[in-house]
Amino acid sequence: MGEIRIFPMDDSAAVAFAVRSLKKHCVEITAKPECASHVLLGVPSKPPEREIPSQLTIIGGNLDGFADTYSKMDLLRDPQYLAENAALTAHCTLRLLGENLGVTLQNCPVLVIGWGRIGKCLSALLKAVGADLTVAARKASDWGMLTALGYRSIAVSQIDIDNYRAIVNTAPAPVLEKVSPGALNIDLASRPGLTGENVLWARGLPGKMVPESSGALIAKGILRQLQEEAL
Image (cartoon, rainbow, N blue to C red; front, top):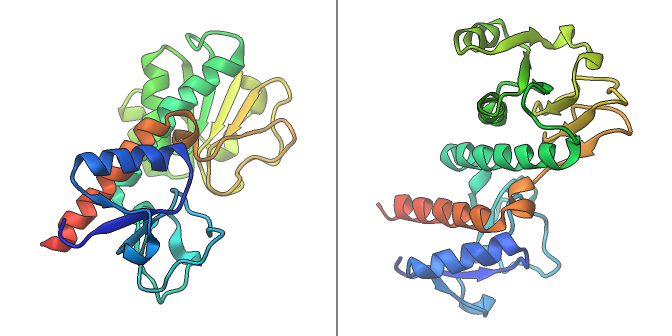
């Protein structure tokens, strides 16, 4: 990896596993920022307590809040990282449903809102375990694809919250002004889509629930981008 030396500036478990994986791929990790070429933050990233030297490239996610004077490697702009992270999020959500529902998912009426990356991955898992699944989407083209794939689909405007034991939102925009008090309501979106007190806010699940898998994915994304830069 040439002159690449990464200084980890985040104490999360996911970053620790990412560092372990990078070391296995012969990427140099340094404990001295003055010796580094890159600084590794969490994904998504928040501003660290200490200042980042201006000559370092920042590795993280959602880096728009950092000054444009920095070079950046934003994993949340990497389509492959986003797709694989969506799959991790879906698996974590399935676990979250199992831990909080009190009933099995087989034949359980579940609504997934949104047909993006996470919605697609989660719907496939829910269908595989036998949930009584409905997917709400905004676009007619999505309704057609959902039908073609064997899913029950409805428009967002047709949602009746009383029909479901669990509602999972993946759309990063307001979709429901109220939620069912008798349902498990989970919001995965980066911007809230559900409104109400009875909502489980569940962002950044991979880093919290499967930090080893999350760290491995972060390392994989870094290695891929470093290799592309070297070409």
